[in-house]
Amino acid sequence: MKTVVITGSARGLGLEMAKVFKQNKFNVVLSDLSIEKLNEAKEQLDKSIQFGQTEVCICDVTKASDIKTLISYTKQKFNKIDIWINNAGVNQPEKAIWELSENEINSVIDVDLKGTVIASKLIMEEMIKNKSGAIYNIEGYGSNDAMMLGLSIYGTSKRAITYFTEALAKESEERKTGVIVGKLSPGIMITDFITTALGNKEKINLSEKTKKVYNILGDYPDVVANFLVNKIISNTKNNVKIEWLTNKKAAWRFMTAAFNKRDFFKNRD
Ligand SMILES: NC(=O)c1ccc[n+]([C@@H]2O[C@H](COP(=O)([O-])OP(=O)(O)OC[C@H]3O[C@@H](n4cnc5c(N)ncnc54)[C@H](O)[C@@H]3O)[C@@H](O)[C@H]2O)c1
Image (cartoon, rainbow, N blue to C red; front, side, top):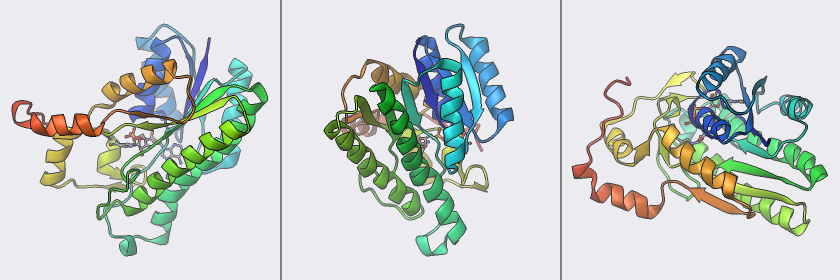
């Protein structure tokens, strides 16, 4: 039985990906900031899916010691880690760059960029010992150079994640480590992420214009997770990009928007 570790998986995309892995008979290790939320997530998973084993482990990805604990905990439970997904992330407050405090800037970069970089380094060291494994990092707004006031620090981190992941894949190839590295591009998902900044510290009030775009391009995370995880499970190539919202799909969504009315926000705020 294979084992997957997903950071930031007490809710949202991380939890939905864990469900699909479990349905595919993987052992899953959920990790996040709060043990209460992790236990609730584990209960949800174990109640609905009989296959695989679920374990939980606290891990704040801004702390290398927590990441090391997550690795050793998983090894102790399941012996080996087959897939590691750096999913933990926070949104930024909707402000211009100079309006953000130093703490706000640091928080976003520490979780979204440094969390992924350090976790990738540590899990790479581990997977190299087995000469096998797969690491996936999550792209987001800014990965393709898109810019918008209020998303610049998040976008800076996600743009860097794209470069970093490709560089890691290249180095893994050159050193013949046996470890594959890839990017996951989930598009726009209707999760708590889009309406809260810095974890849950600050509310983001979406404008009517933004809601209109999200209604056209957005999807619930279970739909996206189903697509991503099935591709991850069948993937054997290094340096792949697994993309949900392709340009073609986005264009089709806009073209058919008049016939396909959706309102994700009716009962949300
Ligand atoms: N929602 C979207 O539209 C969207 C679009 C593109 C990319 N993404 C990316 O997808 C990933 C998941 O997003 P989501 O929408 O499920 O968000 P979410 O807010 O629902 O879930 C993120 C999880 O990360 C956890 N987390 C936050 N800081 C952490 C830390 N320091 N250590 C460990 N865990 C931490 C949170 O507690 C939460 O459970 C993120 O990397 C995000 O940037 C989201």
